[in-house]
Image (cartoon, rainbow, N blue to C red; front, top):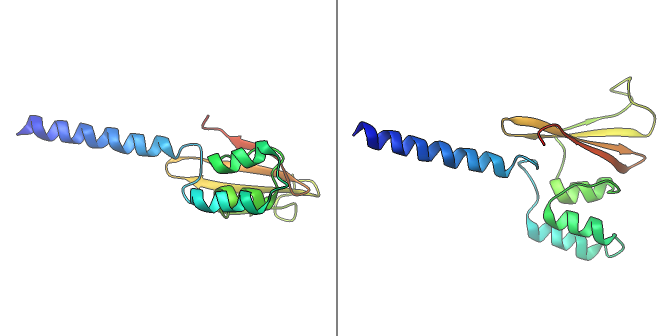
Length: 121
């Protein structure tokens, strides 16, 4: 009986690890694929690179605030120069939390993604 319990526990650990790994590069509350496709269809002016990134659920340089919201939803935290004396005028940082993993930071300058800082990579 003890061997059976160990096997089940091992399988459970593998399943949890796989689940956590699948959300390692994106936030937990990512909008559904259908919603992301609707956004892309409604915004035909987007570059092909940004359209593909939104569909895949990835945030890339050049996206706007709305593009990022369509891709990952609302951030968990927003920092501005008023909150953080180390930020310059026009800079904004969004933080997306993930389960048991270092958060992702999206840095904007004048409303455009400048960098996506994901220390987990």
